[in-house]
Amino acid sequence: MPEAKRRGTFGKLIRNRSALIGGTIVLIFVLMALLAPILPLADPLKSNFLAVRKPPSALYWFGTDELGRDQVSRLFYGAQTSLLAGIASVTIALGIGIPFGLIAGWYGGWIDAVISRITEALLACPFLILAIAFAAVLGPSLTNAMIAIGLSAVPIFIRLVRGQVINVKAEDFVEGARSVGVPEWLILFRHVAPNTLSPIIVQATLFMAQAIILEAALSFLGLGQQPPSPSWGQMLNVAKNFMEQAPWMSVAPGIAIFLAVLGFNLLGDGLRDALDPKES
Image (cartoon, rainbow, N blue to C red; front, side, top):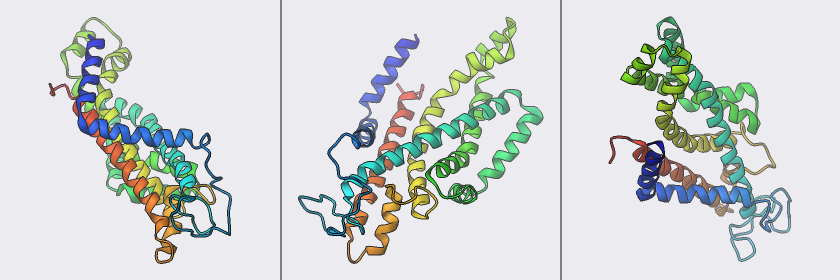
């Protein structure tokens, strides 16, 4: 049955046009990040003052920046930064959010009340403002930006997991396991937790898009990836100073951020449809 269910889910996923488009876009960016050190790209950190702010050409497909660095190379290496930020942020959010959500939903009572009140207080603060506050406290760096983004998303996953656990623990199979003497902790981890995975996977995929945007925003504000290491948000931060002299500097990173976010959102929507048991 689990194998048949997996085949059915995969079949629905590949038949979903949005999921295919989104998955293809995501795969392209993953390949960009993985192949960046292998492809014969220019050094993304090496300045060339004889090629400062060159427009797109056969030699420089997306032009060069204010220090003569190749925009194509920095775009490829910037994909590493964005995907790393997304994966690390989601991992942090899941690593903290899932356990607290499981505990709050399963045990209820004062434990649930304390966790829920703290979660609601954090959710009352806008997500972007919360991430900027964490990043400002931790200090400007890519690592701190990833931690800030992950911590800002923890309340979202706590609330999601808690709600799923409350729904699942009322099912008959949970009561059946209790009636035959299965320990509470075993019921939680063997029967309840696995049945909360579908919405968590969907939310994690959708959050990847938010994490990419937020990493770009923090880098744009100087709180993320620090120069001279490439980052799409940092490239936009520099490009804003040369919009009249070199408008091409903002085109490539802007389109990259747009497509990466679009890809993860489409993939997340496709996963939601494929994992929904109500869908045929």
